[in-house]
Amino acid sequence: MTAERSMTTEIGGVGQLRRETNRRLTCEREDADRALSKRLARGEQRVDEKLHKSRSDIDAKIVAAGDAAHDQLEELPEELPEALNGAVLSAENPRDPIPEPGFEPGPTAEQETIERVEEAHSRARSNAQAAVQQLSEQAELALESERRRVDELTQRDREQRKRDFLEALVSERHATDDALQEERTRVDFVTRNRDDVLAMLSHDLRNYLSAIGLKAELLAETPPDNLVLSQSLADQIIKSCKLMERWAIDLLDIASMDSGTLAVDSRPHDPADVITASLEAYLSMANRKTVTLIATGVPQVRPNILGDQPRLVQVLNNLLDNALKFVGPHGTVTLGFEVVGGFVRFFVTDTGPGIPEAEQGLVFERYWHTERTRSGGSGLGLYISKRIVEAHGGQISVASEVGKGCTFVFTVPVAEASLGVRP
Ligand code: ADP
Image (cartoon, rainbow, N blue to C red; front, side, top):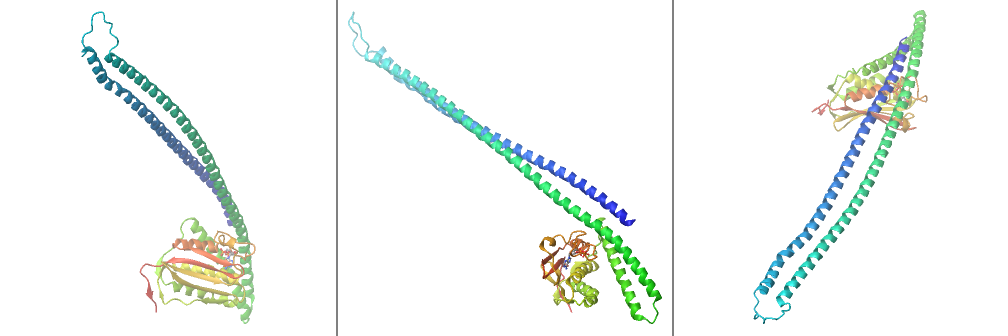
């Protein structure tokens, strides 16, 4: 019943997730479209401004050239009156004697001068007008060709921008499609695994319960003097209870993490206490499995860490549990810690089969496991450990070489001003 309800919630959860990612994708696309359109509009505006400036520069140059030509032209009449005045004055007041009556005067030198000056003036004027005319025609042509050039550049620039815009849009679409596809594949994988785990959980729980019931009945029927059998039955009952307890704790942790209430009660304490607590919990299991469990020397000068001790022991226990599970008989598991900057770094190293590189990033995912390594685990241990470490402000990671084993490390912040010598 509980499993059924959980699965329904699960399926509802995936639908919800899909709707959420679709909604996010739509929003992201709208944002991207808006940003790109804005960029395009800004680009167009810049091109228009450049075009406008370039045109005003050319216009100003042409106006300046026209003004200069006009100025030259304007200067001519001011020079002329003096020359003309001189000529006119000499014509009106001749210095030569008055000619005899009947004398037909030819053009005097002054009149000739006046005529020459007037001719020169008129020639200069029409030359200057022709020059101004030519200049303004040239300027008009230059302006026209400059405009055409700027128009072509602008057009090319606009087309390039449009191409860039479309390319950016297409690549952005591909990127979001890829991200969505990846997320969906991951969600499908997690969902499938979670469904498997829930099916496995209900199956295992029933098995554990019937095994416990059966062994309890056998224990009740065992003669009191058969202590070996009673002890063995009691051990099996305890083992099944522990496995069920582990499942229950993991599922409870997940439930509280999902509801955002993962309690972490951080206080300053000695990191060596975390190592001691885990060692005590796993020494006898290591002995039973003929695995050598070693704790490296604890540094005499060490800081306190700021953390929730039972939660940190839970993380170290998860790592030790896995290491002992995978290492096999006669393997070695080493645990310890070192101080790195403002953090204490705990580590658990084993000589087991290791984890392929492609799987190293996945082992911290919820419900993650492979058929190769599946051994009744929930696939939640490392996920929960990661969440606990992150709730402390630390990080957890794994390094491994297949066939040689792996090393899990996690960091916990040092409590301020806590470096001290311990007894
Ligand atoms: P489980 O409870 O199923 O072990 P975990 O989250 O603790 O779940 O581990 C997830 C998976 O990570 C395991 O199923 C296994 O594939 C891999 N793994 C974890 N620790 C080790 C290790 N020390 N050596 C090899 N594989 C490991």
